[in-house]
Length: 236
Image (cartoon, rainbow, N blue to C red; front, side):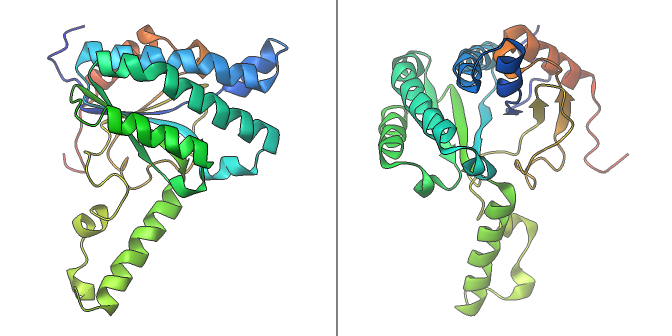
């Protein structure tokens, strides 16, 4: 694949199917989450090879807090282990770690690990890996609307001053471009409260593969499909 031809600047992935992958093998759900960590490495390596600048992974949604506490706790422990084990590789690969979502809801140890790895990788500039943690797009947009309303109350701007650009500047993703390509694994046809504002004009590719089986070749194929699309952005 030619890395200089129509490569998306920003790829977002809904990592779906860990539980079903485990169930199909007669394994506990936690084994699916552990296996999915290897797919994260594959996705990072593929994006590095292609020259993608941003990779956003839907790692834990705001709705996922409703799962059994044992599963949530196991996911937080797995996240911490992943971050600690991958930090040297992120540095070696010149990958910056960033995060979006309601991070204050995460356990303190998880927040500390996130902060430490983000600080370590802050100057890296080859690829930005964005983890969406405790993230929900409706909550994100609601929080932005509250900030704008507060600004009107304080006289910083008038209601007619509020534009899509102003609202976007108050989202968690204000410092990054909108995704060009959205990939969802496991064959499900939903966006699941993920980057609803930001994916307005993203190309979508649905992959039947469960996330733990997702490999570099699957991402390359999704990008090939993206390259076939003619992006009109509402025009002709």
